[in-house]
Image (cartoon, rainbow, N blue to C red; front, side, top):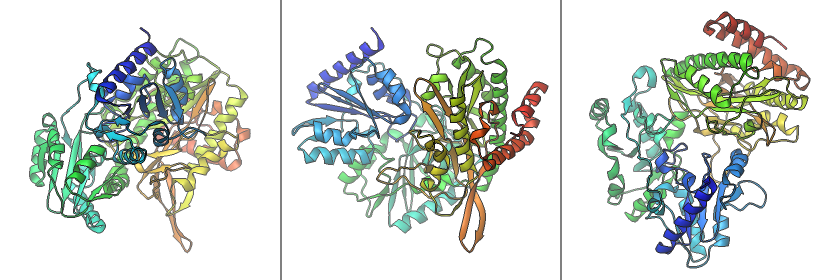
Length: 602
């Protein structure tokens, strides 16, 4: 049975179960009970029932139809993976494509029931669906997960041992963070705060886990009041260090599995602060049923965490320099071997991963390395495997997007290099992407600006070609945490509710414009930038960026005609600094000579 046939069978099996429960619709999202971006295999229901492996997608199954919503990063990939399954691809953001809630209002009928797992549905989306269905006389049911009756061999969940970070890594102790959090609760008039988002909790308690691949987080829930803190953890994950830590700071440890039972009994005499985008729908329903008033606010820990302290910044500078050296040595290897000998995308990926993980302080990758040649690079989140990968040929681009989880930081960097003689049109695309990256990296802007204000600097050179990349320009980066972090980001368009945050000193942001041409090529260049102070005068306080990434940009891919004099100066200065900073890390004379050549002025 082919993969598409297997998906069709699973959908039919699901429809039979839906019929038994009286459901006309079943909804699957791509998340876990904590609104995590990366999730364990046991939560990959949408992937199991659709065959689509991208990290963002929502699957709606009806009695006779099925639709999958995903964003522009995955259109090419989704088309390939959904072929033959009978699932309709809904291209989010394209003209004429309805949003999920709009589609339900139009297609569902009075008396219909939609089932979804309330633990896997965000509170905000759950509320929107509930109100939309109620308006047409339909019902949302969130108490039962119907996929469990079909997906019998569901992988087990995780409960890896948790470690407590030493002061030389955290830079700020738990007590000070909790004082700051409670001050914000008091300012907002909240008597309690319920936290579900995993990286926020890891940061708050200065702990790290191993429950999700690439993200050093542990499954947890937290309830904070003026007088106490309750932390729910899996028993098998609690180390002696965690017990001692909890005892020292008077933190009540409880079983992870007891959280929902406790919620159904807890009544707080005042507003409960909760982030509807990062809390599941069941949590909110239980709190409300207990008579609690919910106050929808972004987790204060999100912005507190985003502004790195002095110790974190010092560690990040060191880690990014070390990581940049690893990628630079890999690019030297690729320029010497790719296109000249048999080398697949998977081979290259394994080599870079091994080079990074050889570092004593690197514990894991920060995401699956994207190693893509030619048309595969047009898929923004392409994943090469031994069974599904291409040979790295010539006369096109090779793109590699990768990062590591170090003691001292989380890294993320992308480079695109020319293999062989790249056509002139592709060089033009590359050079305009480079111009955008350099313009943003060298930006000066007033305090109070958000990512919307500076996005045009990176996107403008691509828009000049009457092209666009269907994603944001930049995202925040965690510290020994998730590679994608908020609230800061760089994009020209934001969702209707929230999402836009002021860029503040101490924040990290990625700078990664691109060009993606389906069936031909993909280009992305990415540096990580640290927001910092520049000047204060009568016109206000000016901020700018400090690059943390120090990796050569492939001059073989550049057409200097598409760079102005200022952009050439920026590139030459950057390459001069790259050469000075990385030369001590080169391990052979060959690498030293290549670095000299790769950073020559243009």
